[in-house]
Image 1: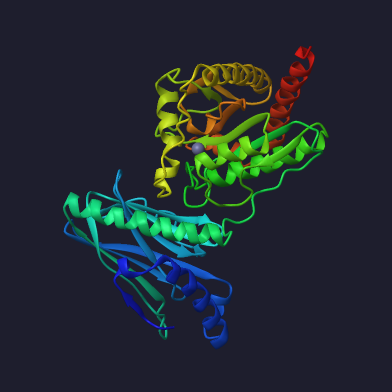
Image 2 (image 1 turned 60 degrees about the horizontal axis):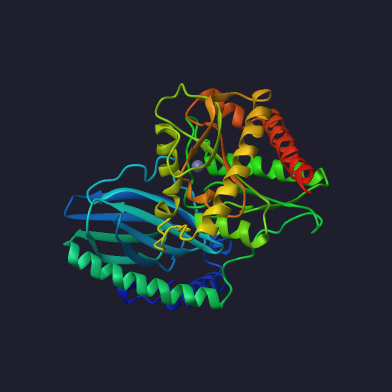
Length: 417
Ligand SMILES: [Zn+2]
């Protein structure tokens, strides 16, 4: 592969996209790197340096095109890559050094991966390049960050946003966002949207034994979807069916555009106090029911920031009386469903004290779709972690959710004039 030494801000997004195709075809033509045919693999990452200059090095099985951006509030550096499988040891990126405080990695959109680096303050990208693999040595992606002032940082961000805008318009034209998950069931049946939390670059909470929230909630959502479809009474749609990142706004949008009659977001939490156990059901409220609910909503709402998104949050400003009434009516339905779900859970699984709580979750803000969020349990607790990965627990929990969904819709039919 050719060495690609270049200033990061000269790399056009379009060049990165074309480069991806070139990388793939050259690798398969030469047949030099067997693994390259199976896709790019990131093998290890390390950080070196101090608070003036810090270097991130990523070892890869072969060269990739990198596209680097800086984002403010909070200060981050984003490296966009073609599809890469990350095989880093578990603790990689959890702590940093020098200007880098932590970093995350994972799939971002279909065919695209991303590394998001949290930085201590304003930084400038001094160098960004990829050294090709040579005999006995992996390819190396190198990023050098240096300290800078806030004015230069904001100017670099403006440039980043413009390049992202051009690139994303290009992706949108190519229809590169991948296929949306498909719903199952008769179109006359009411649609239930199940939303497995986090995914891709945002793994969510992590268990004591390494269980990841994004994986357990997806597994549970799939069981729930299959069982719900089996009842023959509902159409079911998942907001994601793979380990990909989906923004909070996109989850809400998917539910609204598909005409959902109920939205159920599935999560699992983690706390420093490992004693906490049990499930919680959350609904939307402007003022949190308690400090735990408030902290949790803040944590869940950070997902888009963690993934390096810059688009404004879902605000759904309630600016007229009619919209406010719709939202209020929807909240009433959400609360009815939450209470009935808590009732079903009581006889099936362990619940926290005061299991129905509320806070300002962005993902529950569809004004016209009753929406709730389930925290299945605490991955930080060893009992909960074991339970969340057990088939028996999944069955019991899914059955309880289905009972609550059945009675929610039965009640609506009964109330119809
Ligand atoms: Zn979560």
